[in-house]
Image 1 (cartoon, rainbow, N blue to C red):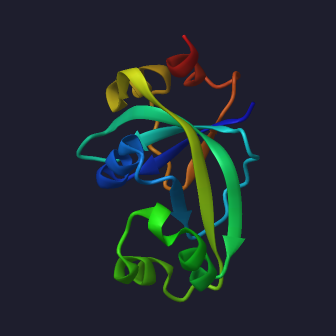
Image 2: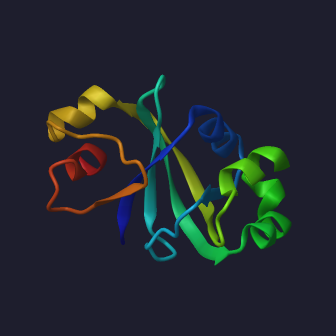
Length: 139
């Protein structure tokens, strides 16, 4: 299985946890196969990994097609969607399944105990068994 860390803003993480948001929107495609595990880093001011999920699908389409197909599952207003996807020919919809809240959140300080210079990814960061940070998730 492939693992990766992805950063998402707190309000979107709450929508994922509530089950309202089942599709994550990105302006670039994420090169991970269906079934990959995503560890969701909630950006500051939270600064924690609170859940994991699996990639159900990745679909890259023009913004209008993404909105038509997944708009209600992205959990943002159309105006915000249009601003985010402005000037993009293609955007990616990442389907989320098997959303699992962690028993204990993993804070940024803990992540940095495994990898001293760890910075939450702007896009995504692969996580493999050779990486010290891997132990934070599979200890």
